[in-house]
Length: 127
Image 1 (cartoon, one colour):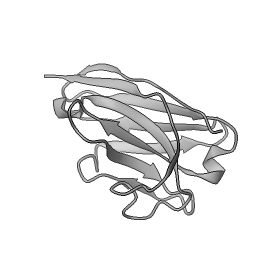
Image 2: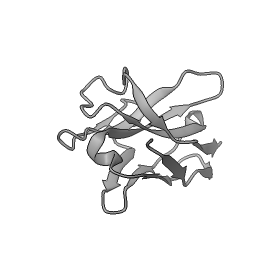
Image 3: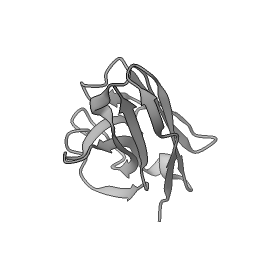
Image 4: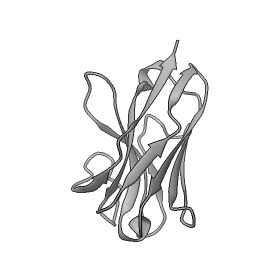
């Protein structure tokens, strides 16, 4: 059973930055693509960013392209999400999740089966 633990959430002013971390158990990064999702109050969950484990490609939602950066440190079994120029509408619970090994161009819109979710970390962006 894969286990994912997020950290790094908090409260920040509009335009500020946060870095989220997701620590994975075992060989999660070798078996799955691990990415970030978020869910704002009253809204559907949306994919934010993922690293395709099949070829290392980083994929981003259009809304965060150029402001967010996903990276991973396999030796620490940790996934990161650097978030810059944050906007109030990005206030949400952020989750990391382990999905299919091949995370193609449409993965963030339709990730398919998710094999493990973290507990989430809350990001609040104030006006």
